[in-house]
Image (cartoon, rainbow, N blue to C red):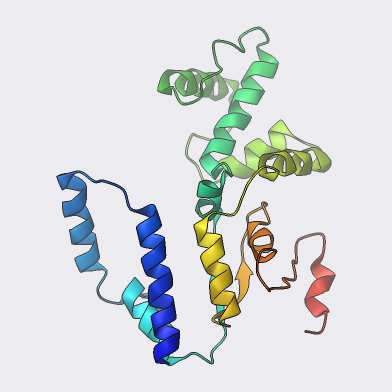
Length: 219
């Protein structure tokens, strides 16, 4: 038990050290307030949310219990995968430029608020697009930009081809080697957990929308 808890604490220490960066006094104050607020477990709608230190203690005392991890798009940003918001902005620009040829140079830099605003204004004038920031934007724009399923698949494959698993995925593999994490669920398209496992003594079984039959395979 002590070994298991010490191992998790060491992984957390490494992650924090690798991601540490100079912060302003205001950022430090905000972080201290957040840390103080997170030193307790919050219950909402019957669920429990644990602070990081409480999670470590829970894992340490229940080392024989299989744990499952659910990760979203933010887990892959540091590995070179665009976030959902970045993809939406790119799809919006693609729609705009293919309907307004000759403006590619003027709308090249999506990081400029003025560029995004002009594109959004054009989309709003069409009268058929969801409001900016609405929950349905992602699904709407990927299907509108690429109506053919194989085109969408090719887009995501292109975006994930050069990605390399960052430290979070490597730490995940260490947890899997210690039998702390036994499965990972994710809507992500990048396959980074399996790529990271290739550098460890792990044999991951990937199950996706096209390979659902793998769920019934024996261990």
